Length: 397
Image (cartoon, rainbow, N blue to C red; front, side, top):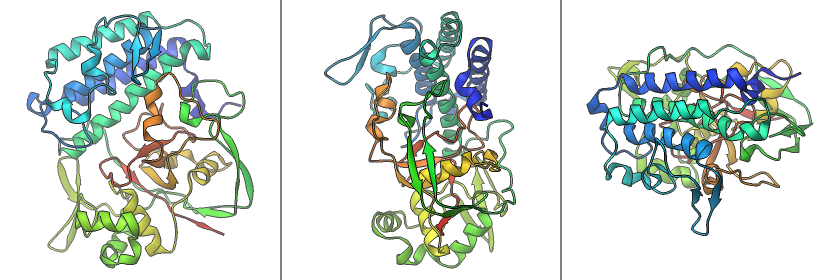
């Protein structure tokens, strides 16, 4: 029986068409209400100019779906046989060709030009949509859908990072009350299952069986109220909770609490997009980095789960995968390839980031449903706190 979370990986025909249009509607809604001044944002690490990012979405879909065949040359770049149709040029909109800082230094298309580019690209994408449900034939169409869904979320964290209003209807709920899950010794399957149908990211393959020792994992993400206990105990000032790279980050950041918290007249507040609100103690702690997550665990006598533990728990009978819909969750693992890894056609999706990034699992309240999957591996550098990330704790039994 196919699990519910596998349905998005097997979209085809009319359902894939509908998903493409729904994702585009989300993207347009999340950039459409911004002012022209907000489109012309100042430089900031971790985010992109709105015009560049939206045009890049159109370029990516057109490049992979309508401009093939593709060739990876000795310079490490991928070239397409066909020239741009609606979205280009490659030198401007390929993230592998234009470094992050340069995206503020080049002439970008105007807002009307970007919207026209997106519309023309979508018309071409739908026109080229293959019939049937053959996984190989649909791979690049599904990849482009997932890619656009990721950039929708990137627009949400851009809005949050720059203090723009939240997208309409985006609200972080409370942490559900769930007992910890406990597991005995188990041989668990992670990543792609043997002969599995549908779309899989290259870093989820080929999958593996791993032996897990007995462990316990929280049944829900950590609430902000519990993280506040750590803050008020002076946890940011105790060196034993911040060893190595964490201590160096802590010294440079000079923080005594999460970056988007403040205490005013004895009352704790959190900035939620453009609004300073009373800290919601029953909501998940969010916008903390991997070092902060680990420091809390050391204070609490716990640890972060491994990615394999997290995935095994999420797939287990009785587990509610809605647990992954509030915040991304840091794991104890560096982002590394599985044994037997082979890069997909979009070579730069995973390969450049192995070894330098930390793995997260789950998904956030701003993440598209099509992304949520127990095997999905998110990855960021450990000092990043602008994404919608928190944690759940674990311990060995």
